[in-house]
Image (cartoon, rainbow, N blue to C red):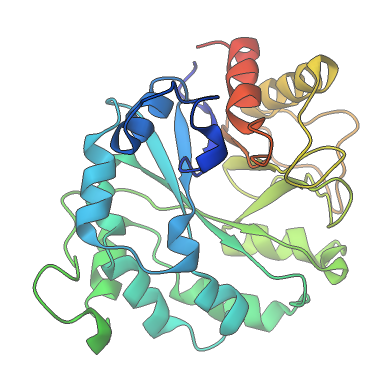
Length: 290
């Protein structure tokens, strides 16, 4: 697969996958390595529910091949409870919790907003101002963590190399359907998530950064339905178009066209209920080439 297109799954530990996607008898500790051999990226979503530990991130990084990448989902404490407000200390805790242990395997950071949080430009600007844009910046922010991460081995506040960190935003409130929103993301240097949610939440395809990030939750039934051959062919065409610097002719845009440039494209299948996610990911990989 070209270095600028990555396809994978959102999470990898699902009991219904055992004996279906994962071979019968495969130890749970071997599931990540098995999935990573068949994908080129995986979205870490346990970080959404609770702060992880540096030992976990190090272990995950050690189990995937060279060149593999993870994206990391930001904590719901920041997005759903704090609603992006007064987030500097929670951000410090998140980046101190071990994210930097991924090293060169660290890809974008995903921020999924709740359906109850509407478009507030000032709130987004304040939040974006605290987001680290490199691992060195993230390490400096991590050193501001509070006492809950005190204790030996609980916090990681150093970066082994200075690498960029990109951030993407997934929105779920209709008030984001305004041209002001993609314009603001371009101003802030944030990517917009193309979220296929079976029509439940806004579907937007504005390109606002040097990457396009897709989350495919199911095209007819949220988290459940798979993508048939025609749908996968359609997504493959769109992915290749975005990666080569263009935009689909029928793109669902709120604002004007993006600057033509080659882009990274990240695609994650989150239709896990019926074990469709890994199958669909591997089928899309076949279409865009390994």
